[in-house]
Image (cartoon, rainbow over all chains, first blue to last red; front, top):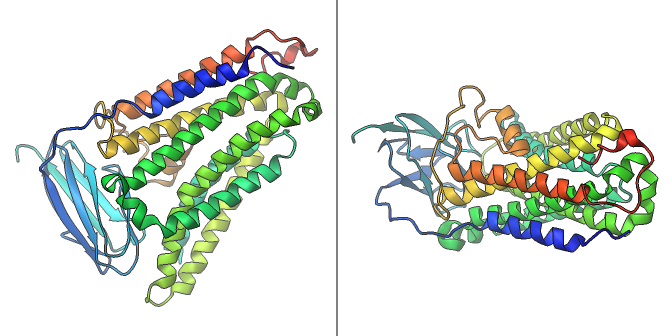
Length: 121
Length: 283
């Protein structure tokens, strides 16, 4: 039983899905605020950052451990695999005032750190 | 051991929730076991391959390779879920009336099954590559006690699998005529959640505009970090501090799927099911 034209309907749906999937690829202004961290012996160095509120920033993490790590923060919504010896950059903010946790999801007991966002910095 | 059990359990559960819904949504379609098993197998294989290339993948797209890849596979899953729902809208009534009637439409059923196998593969691939990387790290680490951690990881896989199975059994305990309505809604919300996550991944790396950050904060009620929060993220795309584009993608996908499903099931058909009481099963 062939009802109408199912391919047309699927086509319309696919078109809509693609439109959703690929919105406007616009580049944003460059962000000068970068913080550098390292992971060694499953500890962040430094394990605390002070950032201004209301501003987007980046954290650059280099993994100096002998295992793959996953740089993650529920509070700041990033999650990135960092293989041995490599460096990744995550973006976060703009944050409201407060303290935000980050961690290595593969070593959450030892590798933890915080970001504190304060106004007028 | 407990720590590694928890880490692996969480990832397996996230994928398992999706597999559970797919199993419930394909209940009654002939030959689905092979497709779902194939999807899981492909996902595991893909996860192992992905884990091997994690380093090089990360360097693609100026360091955003992981996010772009995840967003792309999520979008594929969204399309496949949408396809399945539209197919179900067409055939749900007949299925509710007589499961076996579908035997005559095996060829078309296969297409929907293939779509759902892709969804399963994507879910297993995403969470699986994290499990593989974690367990690999445990296995090669020089620290003592890695056997117990490995054991914990394997127990985590088992526990996640069992819980997912229970969720599936719980879903199919719903009477058949209501099951289609329930799974259609679940699949639509699942797709919306995946679209939202894909948008959040891309906006998180500034690839697409975010349309506002931290629109609200419900982390005190349900935190993204809690097990329940993670499950809600996997199932409905929950985020305790969402971005604007994430909410927009979520809503738009849901609306598109509901409208498309309605349009298809409202199409006049050559053959009406005799059971009048079943006429709403397609919605």
